[in-house]
Amino acid sequence: MLPILGWDPEMRRLAALTALLACLAVPAAASASTIFVVKGRGFGHGIGMSQYGAQGYAQHGWDYRRILAHYYRGTTIGSAPTKTIRVLLSSGGSPVVSHVSRAGKRKLNPARAYRARTRGAGVVLTGGGRSFRFGGPVKLSGPHGYTLLSGSAYRGKIELRPGVMAINALSLDNYVKGVVPGEMPPSWMPDALKVQAVAARSYALATDAGGPLFDQYADTRSQAYHGMSAETPTTNAAARDTAGEVVLHNGAVATTFYFSTSGGRTENVENVFYGAAPSPYLKSVKDPYDGGSPRHTWQIRLSRAQIGARLGSLCRGSFKAVKVLKRGVSPRVVSADVVCSRGRVRTDGSTLRFRLGLYDNWFTVTKASSSAQRARSAGDVKVPLITSLLHPRTISGTFSPRPRAVSVERLENGRWQLVARGLTNRLGQYSVPVFDRGTYRVSGAGVHAEPVAVQ
Image (cartoon, rainbow, N blue to C red; front, side, top):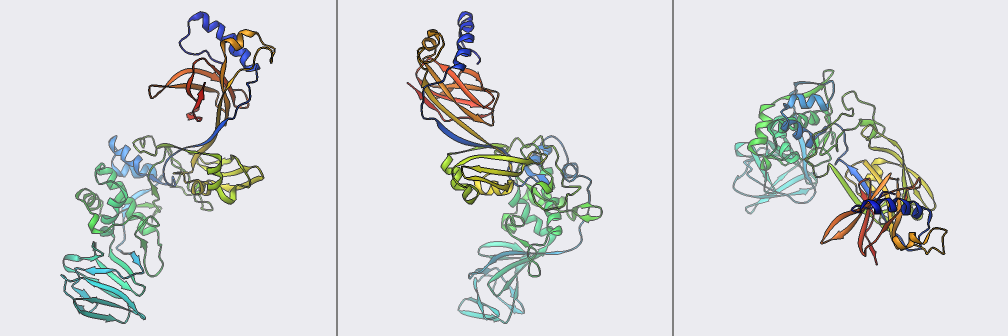
């Protein structure tokens, strides 16, 4: 046990003796307050390019080519093939289109709005008291190269299919203009925006989400695409300045996964996307500059009942612990056992992330308990009377996993003030003497137990 802060030298020597004796005494029984703290790093899957990390590198003077080479090891920058990207904007319902000058071979009034509906195997457009029926899918185009769907502008053409399915068909570089502001703040460094533009262009070519009807979703199932309405001067400049550029590995377009925040290190693809083959360019790399992210580090506090409810069928009985069996390089959780009162269930890091509502697979679950007790009298334990006189109250509890040391803070004028430190035993148990009444909390390894009142 370490001495309480602020004592004079004589009291420090006395404290060393009494603290040692206190470790031998068993505190009087009291109900302990237990909390489970999930402490983690990062936000996203952790594979490929960290967006906050790219911004950090750009702020440190790295250009976009160097940043891309860091995250996608062994790759080069090359030229993209010419391709039209087809993006699913919506499916179902009766969307409204406007700024349409032509629907198939029919001329329409660009100033008029038309509601689209399905009829049999075709589509009907109704507006201005007139209806136009098409026997199958119909392509819409508007003046100045864009069309409006539900008030949002999209470059290229919009294809309406029975359903009603709205698909935006446009050039690859115009598609990237609508992705960059959806994936990265337009106020970020120019080279960070260029990194995003090249990564988005590469990802669109390397993946095919929809099969024969469309290539990409307009959301995070593919990439966040918001069309022409979301474009800004800075993001368009990034798309323009990198026009046609993609990331290549051995001559093929790389699958340039990216995500928000790494927490300080990215991960190997096989350790997050289970069953994926190891990739030479999707390897764990250090990411020292993503500290500007609000999710660089994070904590979630859950009661035993809350964590059990979130785990659902993974927890048989009352929750006890998560025992990590394998971690990746970063070290994100790869596999783990959920330990509950009626047995263990084997699972993986991504499942735990989803069930517990976490930001990333990089996490630990710490059990922290604390309670306030009066030490037993000298008649109850074979220690000198001076022990109970000097330490009439203790704060005791357990941390698991075990930190080597704990800190005790008291709430004073709305702020937590450090008043003592102590050591844990091999089981993670601690017992720290306190002298004054008040509200206390105990912390270890960056996790604090629930506050307790000392009377």
